[in-house]
Length: 204
Length: 267
Image 1 (cartoon, rainbow over the protein chains, first blue to last red):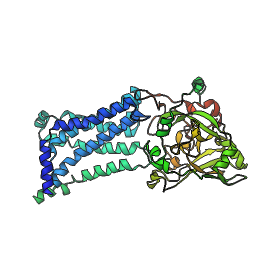
Image 2 (cartoon, each protein chain N blue to C red):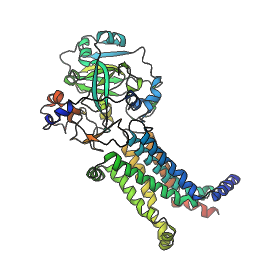
Image 3 (cartoon, rainbow over the protein chains, first blue to last red):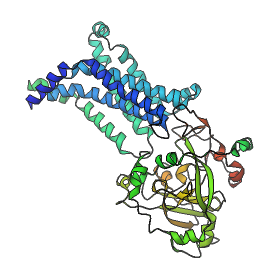
Image 4 (cartoon, rainbow over the protein chains, first blue to last red):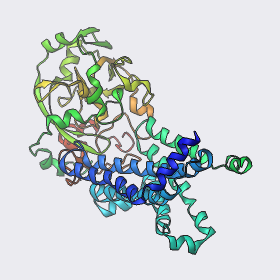
């Protein structure tokens, strides 16, 4: 087991973060290209909107995995956390722009939807919570904010829960996929409960 | 209902049907999965031959009607209709089918009948989507008798002159063009004439969001989204939206069915 962990950690050290950025921006480019050329089916706007939203949620979840992976498994991917977070923010933004400009299109209706439709309100709230996190994801802010930076970035937890609820709320009927996402989110947040989080300290 | 007259000219515009590919690859048929492409992917498993429709309740001649016998007795014609989904997208579909009224007449509707209840096939072995309780299976729908007897209401058995594909509700499905698409129940195995309003699948799942009538109405929002506009499919990524028409543009023909009713209450 520790052999595998060491090998993953060794590999992770050799992969530059720009690789993560480039690889993860490809889906956005590909989806948009597919949308323009008819590859997303009869309703390309909805398909693009949903795919971008789902990738955003996945990235937020990947971001939540990094700390437990290190704490409980010993796999250290912490140097990719900023990239994952910024990519998540990028996909949330693209998702929002697709919804506003390609789907709803009328700005007054965009505003009306944000106010009147609760699942959109909470989706928007998740985006708003991520803005200060993206804005402070540079070294200068980390130094400047000190311990408050860690506190501030716990807003991710709220944002990802809101994102999960947004997904459950927007589908028709009881559907499995958004519930699976929510279960994963809850499990990952559960690993941060003080009783579990203290395990590493007591073991080491 | 003021304003219906204003849509008259638009309602009579020539309709440009969507492609066969669009109509048969983008479907809501949750028995085969909730993804839009799932029905086209999995509905091949549905056995549609032999097929019979049980017609019962308040009819003179109840019984199991074989699909072939129904087709022999009915006159199939083409109807090009707007199709408006409650999810706020729309298509134009060239259906082939016969008037539901003709089928009901064949069975002989008794004087006490006030509603028509419909039921979709439930085949767990052929329908992967029914393993999960997205809805309370089998899918059921209903119409008031006057809605069912309306000449615009058809049972569709084809699209573009071909047999209707399984994902679109083979071998026969309801089409009620002035109502949201989910009212147009697919792959019908049972039609019952009743004297009281029958339960409907989406209304059972969420009565606040889906009413018995579910007439297309731009002025009554779905609680989670507006119904004022729609995305006509087939125009690509930058096609934009258009205003949704009252009764999906069929107001001249059907508005009189609802005279005096508060359509915000009976949504």
